[in-house]
Amino acid sequence: GAVVSQHPSWVICKSGTSVKIECRSLDFQATTMFWYRQFPKQSLMLMATSNEGSKATYEQGVEKDKFLINHASLTLSTLTVTSAHPEDSSFYICSASFTYNSPLHFGNGTRLTVT
Amino acid sequence: DAKTTQPNSMESNEEEPVHLPCNHSTISGTDYIHWYRQLPSQGPEYVIHGLTSNVNNRMASLAIAEDRKSSTLILHRATLRDAAVYYCILRDVGYGGATNKLIFGTGTLLAVQP
Image (cartoon, rainbow over all chains, first blue to last red; front, side, top):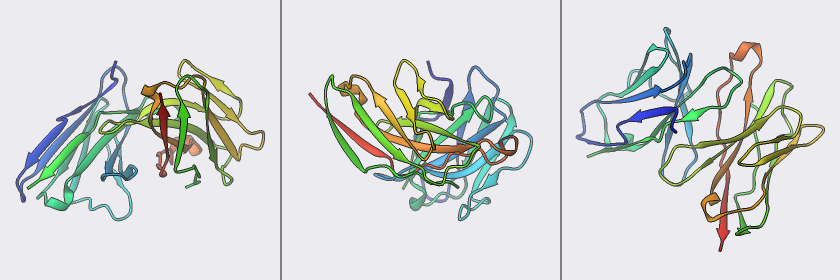
């Protein structure tokens, strides 16, 4: 069964609104979670590394004020897309691992469409 | 970040073995070799990972070259459900995992013919 749960699986919102995506590790504690974005027919692009209890580390070119990440507990990380625009429409995927050298488990992704 | 090189696409026939190659000539001593696969509109799924020795699990086998500059994912009997994009990724676990993020390349699109 799924070990990482992501919610919602899809969301449609209007331009200018904010959307929150949740990522939960179901049967293990994840000190670190990762957030990815994927455009059609492209590979996954790492957006940020989320560490429990500290600020997220963003990849170059990713706006931290636009993509707010909160990792308040060892089983939950959230990504908030603030003031969403149509160009933010994408497939967002989170992942987590039990330890730094164990496999990553991925959520099933969130399809965001901004109209 | 150490990079990997994979063929863009491969084809296989159902019930035949598939060998998916990956080159990682700049691999470091603390890089684990991970393989994931992704079906359309789904998150990636873990397949297998290893450091130096060959690895086997219920899904596949991973053959790692002696110099670790290349590896091969082996699906022993391809099924239609194995059609996916396969990603070979290096995960650096050095310095206690300080740089252990996974950077995806373009992967190999595997088509399985009935």
